[in-house]
Each structure stands twice: as C-alpha cells, then as structure tokens.
Length: 446
Image (cartoon, rainbow, N blue to C red; front, side, top):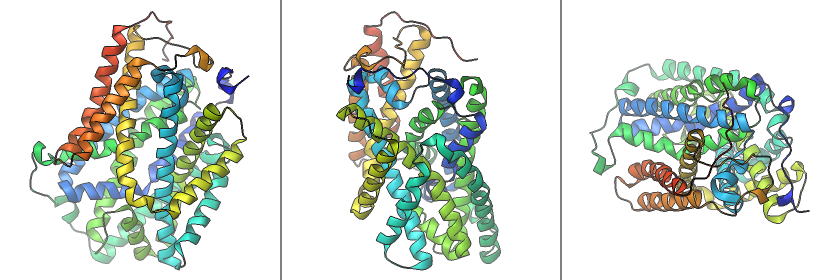
C-alpha cells in the first residue's frame, strides 16, 4: 500500500507538547536579525513615525490572523501539509508543501550566511568554512524535530539574546551619545502612486513574511487543545509580535542612527554589533541566528520530508531527511542565490499570502456551515485531486501579485502585496459558494 493510501494516525493529545514547551520552541523565532534590521530599513525609507504606525498595524493584523490559524490547528491537529489537502486537494497540497519547504530553506540559507559573515568579521578565514561549520552544528539540533529539545535550546538562549541587545543599546549610547535622531528622522510624504504613504509601505513590507503564519500552523499542530487560550494570547498572539516586530525594530532603528557607518541591512546590523562589542556582539548574533535557524531548519526539513514521501511514496527516517536538507542548505550557500533571495521571496510571498487568505476564507465558510470538512486523519483518497475554489483563488491571486511586484511601478509592490490576499479571499468565497456542499460540524474550542 502506498503512503498516499494510508490514513494519518489519530492525534494523541497526551503526546503533544505542553504549553510552556511549545511556547519556548516558538519564541525562538522572536530573535531573528531580520526583525532588527527591517524596522531600521523601513524607518530610513519612510521615516520613523510612519514605520512605527505601520508596525502597530502589522502587529494587530498578525496577532489577529495567527490567533485564528493557531486555534484551528490546535483543534484539528493540522499542519500546513494536511490542511492544504482540504484547501487545494491532495495534488494541490503537494505544491503548497514544497513552497513552504523552499521558503523555510531559503531563510535558513540567508540567516546562516549572515552568521558566517559575523564569524568571519571576528576571526577571519574563508567564508565556505564558516558555512560548513554553521550547517554542521545546526542540523543535529533539529534532527529530532520540533518536539526534540528546541524548547530547551530557545529557553536557554533567550535571556542572552535580549540581554545582549539591551547591552548593545547602552554601549552604543555611551560610546556615541544618546540623541533623538532615531525617533525624529522623517522623509517627504509619498502618495499611493509613489509607493506611499509610508505607514502603508511599512505594513506592506511586513506582509512579505506572512510565511510566519504557515510556521504558526505547523507549530500549533503540536499543541494541546486544553492550552488553546494560552497559545492564542501568549504564544501566537500579539505579545509575540510586539516583541518580534516592535521591540526588535525599535532597537534596530536606534542602533542604526547611533553607530556611525552601520548599514540598515541584516548583514550590516550583524557586522555592526561585532565591530561594536567584539566577542559579545558575536555571541548576540550567534544566539539570534541559532534560535531562528532551528525553526527554519526544522520546518524546511519536515515539509521537505512530507513532499518527498508524498511524491516518491517512500519513507525515510527523519535523520536522513535532516542530512538531505542540510546538504541542500549548504549547497545553496555556495551558490550566488543570496543575490536573488529578495526576488525569490517576493514571488514566494505572493503565494504564501494567497494561501493564508484561502485558509481564512475556508475557516470562515466552515463556521458558517457552507464549506466541507474532511477529518485530517482521512487518507489522501478521501480528498479530490484538486479543489477548484482553492486552486483558482491561489493561481489568479498569485499571478496578479507577482505581476504587480514585477511591474516596477512605484505603487506595484505596496498594493500588490495587499491585493493578493484580498483577491484570493474573495475568489475562494465566490467559487466555494457556487458549489457549497453540506458539512459535518466540528465543535469549536472554547
């Protein structure tokens, strides 16, 4: 019997992660250097006040959407791969899985490359050797999956990360002086046709990392239903994004305007911290990138495994897929893919935002009793090859989003990012309602 014909095991809630363990594992994502530099970059582009307004809107929207997705994943034990069978059909779900895997692997390549540059800044040596060291030490940390000990790793490292950033702020202020330039920086106002206003441009830029919403589902699927309220409010809600986006961005803005010559890029922030604090700065970067990359590796490899098993219909131990994923990441580090990273991620971002919108549309229709529910433990044969509503919404919205992003119109990237999920949501609702079947109701989590 092929893997596609075997049903998934019934979810054993006793085997799921406790609230504290899952929260600590998830909070590894709070410490990416990306979050530190992107706030500074957007403040430079649009002005600090506009960036902060956009940040507040981003935190509100991220918190609201992820509360919905986390609750749904907790209730059904659904990962992105399993849920996509309902949204897109069993064949369409394979595409969603490989896009998820590719995006997580791309981030692993990028974040690992930044750490390699930081090590070379402090110690010198060939970059290739640092790439190899980073892959070799990271892969074993995730060989057992998210449940293994990511909660302990991230719990131990979190105080070092935040303590290190606070030390950097104090150090930079003491060395170069505290002033208000970081909060008063402004740029001329931009109209929508010019790619503005600034707060909207900031909000749109953060939509490029909606992959975190797919991350949310895969993490939340490991939780227990009885902990749903805790995870909605603490783990996957506004607190997380206030720290990940808000606190990191404010620190990044301050450091950028305080340290002479610091570039508002991820590599620039990492190198700036090393140049400012030496080994202590390197420790902060090491902790930051280790915490975020354990999640990137774990999710990239788990979805690569899912894709491989569903397409090749063979089962391999997770440790083998970990080795395969690590080899892919190292190979990509050696290639000039980082030059094309932002382009690739902008395309993938269109696909990801479309998927998130379709997921929300399905959950909405399910609650209204107008979209079908097939229990996640059912075999692939219980699902259609393709679901017209999901496939049409995904393809059309992604095509429109990529077109606008690649148009090079000043407003293309800003409105393209926003138009993609809106279009996907509307199309899914319209097509799904045309052929709405009866549904089996599932009780909601209180």
